Amino acid sequence: MQHKFITLNAPLGQFSASTGFLTYVYCPYPRLVELFGQPQRLSCRNNKIACSWVVLWDDNRTNTIYDYKTSTHYMGEEGIEPEHMHVWHVGGSIGSNADRILRMCYSNFTAEKLLRINDCYKENNTFRRLSEMAGEELL
Image 1 (cartoon, rainbow, N blue to C red):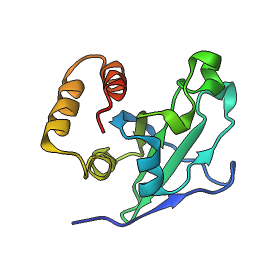
Image 2: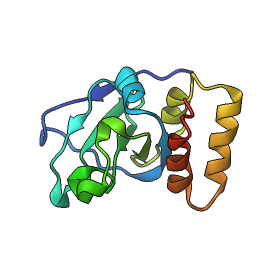
Image 3: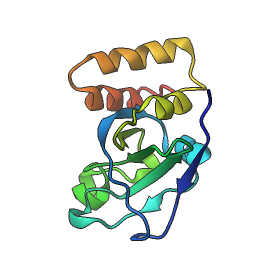
Image 4: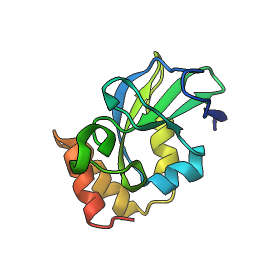
């Protein structure tokens, strides 16, 4: 069954999703915009998150996709602008999982690319391995 969703791009403060970290997803910013529309631009406490997508599913589950402590907003010159990011955090509400987000983001990948990504998830430092793949021009 394919679930329908809406993406909330409400102005800051009109909606906040209470989600917890689930996993990482390798997905270039333009692909996320193609799938979920423009992100919310945030100015949260300590600048830990620069932008995010809040995805509400038709079964009342919620997922979030966001950068966390990786943007120039948090790290200064050592950070990455969100438009150039490839690796994102995926969060979910109680009862949610990341499968729907991962399936959508990886739907246009070849089997070889999916195997390489799967290998990254098997390792301890998933974020680092996925980030390294971004430098290898995976897409």
